[in-house]
Length: 357
Length: 83
Image 1 (cartoon, chains in turn orange, yellow):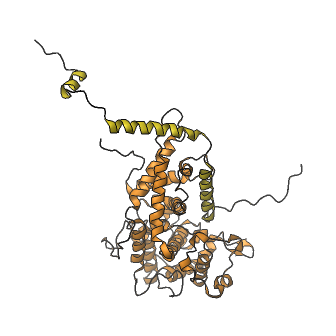
Image 2 (spheres, one colour):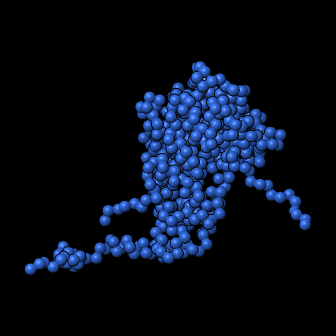
Image 3 (spheres, chains in turn red, yellow):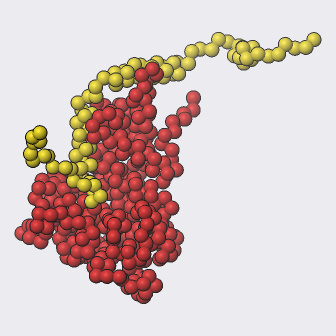
């Protein structure tokens, strides 16, 4: 959400640079998040959440949102937050704040922009937010935000994060009985079938084993399981809050001249290398495949958003998934997903299934 | 007398004294694959409008989620070139 924000904000007619967003006042950032939720795309306007609107349309008063972005804004799919958090970015920045707030092991903040970033990050993502904010998903009922995120990932994808607590032990959290435990196998099956389609889409002198009806069936199965978890607006606020949180940290690493990166002297080429440098400074290793997690996050988010619309539930539509000659085809994104999914899971979805005769 | 070397064909005959019945499931599977291949040969035709619409929807999602690193699409030209 924060990574898209620059396209929706104006300041006297000019776009607001992302670097500037990193130094904004925390109250302003909260207002952006509220306004973003308020202007969410019609696909996300669950009737059950209609009453979750801003009182007196406070979002318009507080922010400079460009109305040209209406009628609706998108934020990333929950899978984006899952992939980014798997790099261990949240825990690493937690250590950064811990060290800076308790001593000078990491040096002192270099400038005002760094101080602003520290203040906003601590206030927005490591504190209990005001209970009436849309992004507040913690309470006496669910006091552990890290556990709440794992709970959401388990319900939606049947997956836990790849790292435990700081002590290396599995992180305790509430596991739901109603969870999409078949997500991974179904998604991998879909990727495998789409890969067959990519391989044979240009074939002219061989039989073509592409099975469009199976692809459509798998896409529908994925749509059904993901939408079931969202019935009645379930998990929408959680998704928005967690995606916003992870996009803040992602943006922090991505933006050239990011104040905290400069302050920590962690400049490098590529977000994963910046994260590795910061991780080294605080003594908490990032995931070795962080680059794959960063690279897969955007395309897999887009693909799942579209699958949830039911766009590929018909045989006639699935060719778009593997035929890159169709304008705007997701084919290049799916190649990226297949490459990095294979790297991070160790499951080679390009390999044909072997069945016993 | 030296025994003649066993060939592949004699080995099969030894192991299967009766003529093997055609493997119905295997034959059916091959027929389906061939039929599917024939059906898929129509892919060389233009894509179905449903596929084009799905790709267009994907493009719209991609543009809606473009990040700060991706510039906004160029605005349409406001004047025509007069040579």
